[in-house]
Image 1 (cartoon, rainbow, N blue to C red):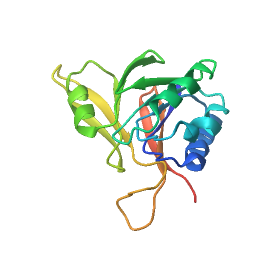
Image 2: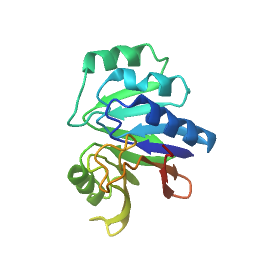
Image 3: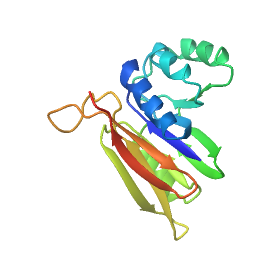
Length: 175
């Protein structure tokens, strides 16, 4: 099963929908949004693409009530989890949160196959040693909106992952 991982869309619906569309074309069957979505309207175009979306909030919360209303009208396409999410997709145990330090801590437990986080606007894929003697994949897709990217030019990034092979790659949107 392939998945799309995004974060930090900051009210920019167009790049978010573009990433989801590209991921869907590449075979993604689910999207994990690691927070700082802000407004629920940012999701409208992405929800219309029909790929199940799992969303957690970040430090830029936005309108929670509208998010819940949108979720109830999505026919199951949108799931808003709140602070964090424990998911099982493609037979893998997945934890999603916004904050990297929290994500790293959860990866260290060894309870998950994959931990997703955001916030830093820096895309990275890390094999985090865990207390069970193994490694947990810790991924941060950076910012799909390009806001606050670490270099001078805005970089719009997202991750496409294959849960069967546990192979993940960073993608950059053209803008």
